[in-house]
Each structure stands twice: as structure tokens, then as C-alpha cells.
Amino acid sequence: MFFAAVASAAASAAASPLPAFSRTKSPCMSDGLAKEHTQSAMVSLPSSHKWRMVIAYDGTKFAGWQYQQSPPTIQCLIEDALTRATKLCRKELCLVGASRTDAGVHAWGQVAHFVTPFMFDSLDTLHSALNGLLPREIRVREISPVQPQFHARFSTTSKTYHYKIYNHAIMDPFRCLFAYHSTYKLNPVVMREAAAYFVGKHDFTSFANAAHNDLLGNPVKEIFCFDIVETVINYAQCKQSTISRKYTSKLHLQGAVLQLEVEGSGFLFRQVRNMVALLLQIGREALPADVVPQIISARDRKELAKVALSAPPHGLCLMSVNYNSDILEPPQGCPPSSFGRTHSVSKCKLPFY
Image (cartoon, rainbow, N blue to C red; front, side, top):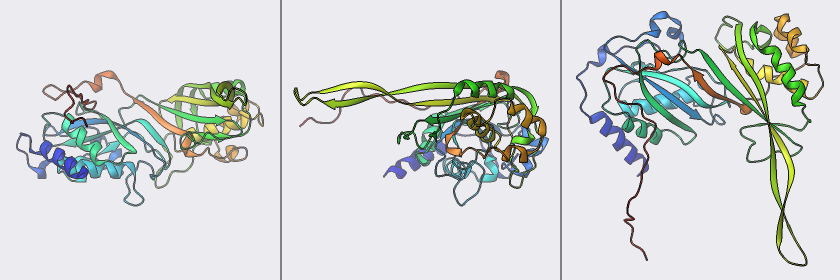
């Protein structure tokens, strides 16, 4: 019944009045692979319409963003939902993501674009259909029309990642999927001192792993800010009084969450996780803070490997992908952006018993 209702919603979107079009003329800028690196991939043909999506997902059980059938990836599942909702094939949709997040990495603000040879009357129906077709770990937060020259990957001005660390002897089971557990007491003061060395434009070769089937690219990236925010977690512990037989609550320190927030012009393969790994060693006071510029200047991944391994993926989350405001301006004649439908009930229609 659930999927039948979703399919009906998707069908109604496809059945809405649309300009006549020929599928043979629909453009295919890129499928996220080799063609993505060409200049022509950045501009769609005049007969096409481009749409931007903001996507959130729990990456725990997925093999990252990049397309592959088995095991399933985020891109694969979104393309499947788009295909069913729009009746277009994968090559016609040309879905491209802003960041190729690794297996196990989460996202709150992943951005992707796709193209269609027709204009939508309303994006709300498509938005509802996509979230109905996707697994509950993946949600499209926003769909909006964008300029033809917009490109989810190449138009970015910066990206922001957060890495969460739960710092206590015992892990909070409600945070275990989204935070790395450190049983070592971390010193956030020296971690902030070390993180400041990353800020600025540097050659980050020492912090980049060799990507599969991909070149390293330009290793020079600019880090705009690198902050460490500490949040103390207090829990109420209930105790029973043997005399009054009443429960009393007492606050006690249970642990702390360190959130490492980094914004940069771009990041190399596993760069963020490698920077976090080094900061963890510094936070444990196993290394001094000034080791950071030494490893940066070495421009050799082996130098970092001597003192730190990559931090695990589940603590990392892509929070936002940022663009210049002018390129996000919608073209004339396009439907308004969809942020999801809200429903309200003015009168209960169910009988009372």
C-alpha cells in the first residue's frame, strides 16, 4: 500500500501538463564519472532545465556517494528514485554530487543537481515522491531550480565538515553511529592550538590518501577556519530512597562531545579524517601541537602515517556546500523551491469510541 501510494504520487507528477519534448534530444552533461571533468559538463543545453537538491543521509550502511550498484550507494538510490518519479533514464538525468563522501560518512547538506528536458509545474509533488521512494536513511531536504551554468561540484566556494568525538570512558549508545569514541582524555586547548596551523593555503599532500581510480589533483587547498567546540553532557541519575520510597534525581558529569568544525575551499581524499587523526594524537598529548606545520611541510603521506592512522568515517558529516548567491538565483518562469509539504488537520475525521 505504501509504495502504491508513492507510485501514484510520482505518476501524477509525470502526468501533469508538460511541454512536448523529444527524449533523444535531452542532454547528458555527466554521469558523475569521466565526463564530469570537462568544461561542457558545467553548462546544460538551452532545451534542458536544471534542478538542485540538498540531501541528508545516514551513511552507516551505504558504500559512500559515488555510483555503484553493489553494495548500494547514495547516488545509486537517488538515481533510481528519480528514474521512477520522472520516467527518465540515468543518462538523461545526469545526476552529479558536490562531494564524493566515503563509505560510512554522513551528510546533512550534500548538494546534487540533475537535468530534465521538461519544466515541472510544481516541485512539491516530485519532492514528496522522491522521499517516499527513498529508504528512510536518505532524505531530500530541498529541491530548487537553478541557472544552467550551475554545477554542484565545480561551482562550490567552500565546504564545511563536522567531526564528532565522544570523550568518556563509556560510550553513549545513542551516539555510537555518529561519533567516534575516545577513551583517552583529550585536551581541547592544545587541539585548538594545533588546528590553527591548518588555517590558510597549504599543500596538503601529507594528509591525502591515494583515491581509487582517481588522480590526486591539485594538493593546494585553503582552510578558512578550523574550530573545536566542546559540549559537556550531563545526565540525570535516579536514586530511590529506602525511607521515603521516592526517586530523586541528581546531575552528574557523564561525558563531553568535541565537535571539530572545518571549512575549506575543497578537500583531498580523506584529508579531513587524516587531519582529525593527528589532532586526536595531539589531544591525547602524545604529540606537541607544532608537529602540524612539520608534517604539512614534509608533503609526504608517510610522515603522517608514522604517528597517526585515519580517523574512522562514522564521526564525519558533510554539513554544507556553499555557493555564491547569484548562481543560486532561479531562472524566470520556474516553479518555487520545495522544502517539503506540511499537513494540518482542522477537524478529526475518526469516530470516538
